[in-house]
Image (cartoon, rainbow, N blue to C red; front, side, top):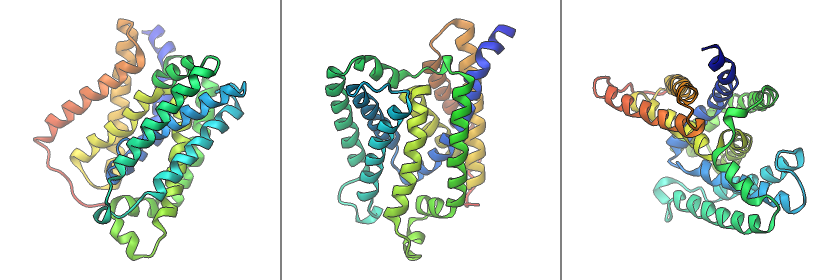
Amino acid sequence: MSDMVQLMTAPFVACMVLVAMLAYLGVHIIAREVIFVDLALAQMAALGSTSALLFRVEPDSALGYAFALGFTTIGAAIFAATRTHRERRRVPQEAIIGIVYVVATAASILVADRAPAGAETIKEVLVGSILWVTWPAIGQLAAVYLVLGVLQWIWRKRFLTISLAEADAERQGWSIRWWDFVFYLLFGIAITLAVPIAGVLLVFTFLVVPAVIAFLFTRRTGLLIALSWSSSAVASALGLGLSFTYDLPTGPLIVCMFGLVLVLAGALRRVVPVKQGSA
């Protein structure tokens, strides 16, 4: 037991730091119906990291992160520019997101073919290295996420209204595309930092599954966030514990545990009424 605690404490804390930001952002993603936007932004970040190798820049260096963030910013600008009111859309935004993802993936493969260690970088982006995360990396992640959290809090009314009540935001005359760009830029920064640690699969899980579980039971903002965080803690702890006990790959097992928790939540939903309202 002591060996498990010693080995798994840092990964569990990393999961909780990631969930503290990503589960909250997932509430926005579900409400906006742009489920795969994180995959697209993560792939843009991967394209930036792979492109950095062409200039002999290590992806985990400050300049490497700048490359990744630069490409992520381009993605944020595309998604903000293509945003239209749901009732006036000729093309679903999910289609735009899918196109960005496919093109970024294809470009990453082309760049990786010419970049040293490009294939290894693409692999790391997919699976991450959550088991080997270090305390300094967790500290840096927490510091940046704290800043992002403060900004999310300051602009919470704008972001939540646009996500949950788009018509109200339009009536108040807000520049929705501008605030969308700000939201996606902050979102992209969070994704850019999360992917090297957790990988695309686990980051997508942290974003979407906790929010889906929460939306099964409530529409109240506070409860949505609380349920997202608590379900994430349970699934992460189960995944890490089973990974240690049975010597299984950590990231994929955590993803599977989130799937199990979602199934159990769906079964529980049948006997628990949904709470309406937004507070």
